[in-house]
Image (cartoon, rainbow over all chains, first blue to last red):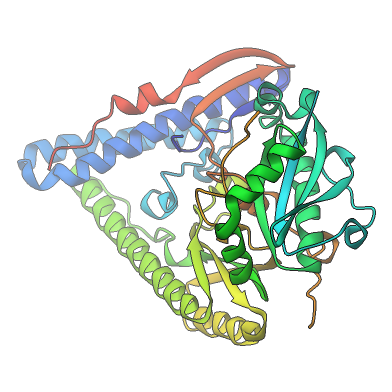
Length: 94
Length: 257
Length: 59
């Protein structure tokens, strides 16, 4: 069985909370991809020229800012998105 | 249609030893007799414990919890009386006769396990990395360039990885030290934080088979080892019946029905 | 010979700790998500496909 991060198996919603729950789910997925992309970038950055590094870094920084703003809309903290990339995932992610 | 549900293998017992013990689904627990050992069993309904029914029921958390605790109650009752080798949840045979056959097949493996477990209890030791060690620096300066952003993230990541590496080494050392004081030791998968509801990462989930006469030493060692590292905290559970020390695969086969 | 009291009412066991010991693989949460609204399943998201598209860099 694969152990994959962060998503509860079932999200029980009533009409009121479904919007927030769906939003949190979508944000969690986006945050997961953002973290994976960022980790890849960090691993590759030494092999890239300065221009590429700057472009990559700016894009990721903007993505991080956008996520912060989106989370703010529903009052979700980083912890609420509950990313856990494996047993020590929380020590390796933000 | 019924089947025979097996809870545990024990040193010889009689029905009067276990009295009015109840097991899964409230069924009565009986003793099956084997060669120099006994087996605690119940008669269960296939509508609840047949292969298909089980597949569904195991997904039902309420059923799973209730059944797991009922199973555990029986195993603990056995362990309170004599050396007990617990069997996994839903170890089921066609009937008493095939259960006895299974028991005899276990034979030496079971008797060996009983001898090893006798006089011991299982103790669980879970280690957690305290968040303080891995929290991002709250005073991180605001960055203005993409390059600075990446550099900062990398420094932060390296710090966390080093911390994670250290945590793993600490957990490993503590495990090795405690294993020396136990008759046997094994690791379980660390718990997903969604399950524990605990913010702290679990860096070790271990079980130790500890001789009752050495328990005080073992407990002191846990306190000392954890006390020497301020970034780690511990949760000790027990005594458990020796669930984690049942030899595989001979005694851990799944339902025959 | 002293008998240790292992009866469940003498100790409080967490369900996860119990399942670690009673089930073969312990408790593993899979990555498939179903969102249900009042018991009616709405969406099933397969995360494996998503994560598989993000590949690790080759060494």
